Length: 370
Picture 1 (tube, one colour):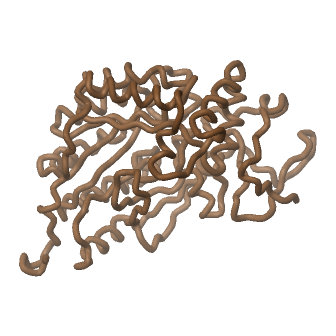
Picture 2 (cartoon, rainbow, N blue to C red; picture 1 turned 135 degrees about the horizontal axis):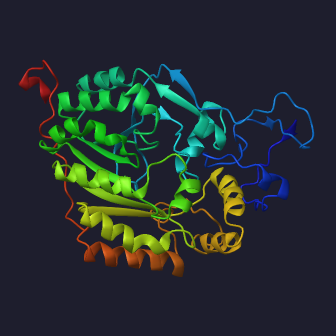
Picture 3 (cartoon, rainbow, N blue to C red; picture 1 turned 120 degrees about the vertical axis):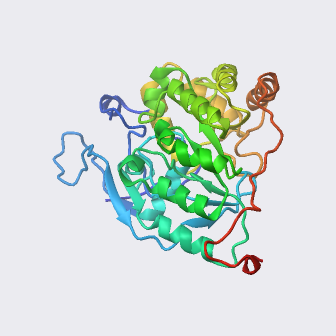
């Protein structure tokens, strides 16, 4: 047993040769980072050691949870949402950069491999949402579905919680904003089309790279960029307002693809866009560094230093309004490109509000709504 490193400014070291030899294919994170809420951990100090407690690269495990609530108020002023709901905690997509990884520590797990392999399933999410919307104190504003983890991750094929949440929202005329990178969303095209006809839904599709070699290691269990373009086109053709999320942009890895992504998204029906610049907060700093040196040893130092340059010498800046955009010449260049191509490809549609005036509680008298 040994104490965890509590120094948030500690600089990760490049992966050793022994570490480089062990690569978990199909997973983004290659390590289980320490949980900041647990004061001790067990590690394998010598690779030749025989330790029956060392966890193997097991398959994904679904942990059913009887949640107490599903809708959460969002306090962050720079994320563009008021409330969010997430039927799943943890995400099998395994995106190495995902900020939601840190939240997995609240469940007693690691933000690393545990985040991808131990998926918490809130089986009672639809019932909780119905109860929430029936509360007379609820004054309708849009709710973001996938404010944390992707609601269309592989678990959705089995549990179909996102579909059920949409059915509740459609029944109440509750507007939702969505973001995903999985083509599984097309299964729900019928209900999304119906909600779109009432201005109750707006969707962002996240696209980070057309480089399949990069995607396979950076977002190992996601669909391809071409499939995501298909999502934009099919849903746009069905009357759903579609946008593209470029995030995060990582200097030296994918920031040079910004124009191609925005052009392709526009050609397939996207009318608005958003982007974020890479930030490595909490445990993500450790696992991203490990991942970067294992997958891109030829440019790892350069990429790492460019990220630091955009965050005042660190790889994360927690200040509102700055943390997801960065500062300095590198992040400024990314921002300038975004605004240029946003205008060039007509992705700067006017702010389009979802319709909150249609909200109603089933069975309620009209006069009791106010």
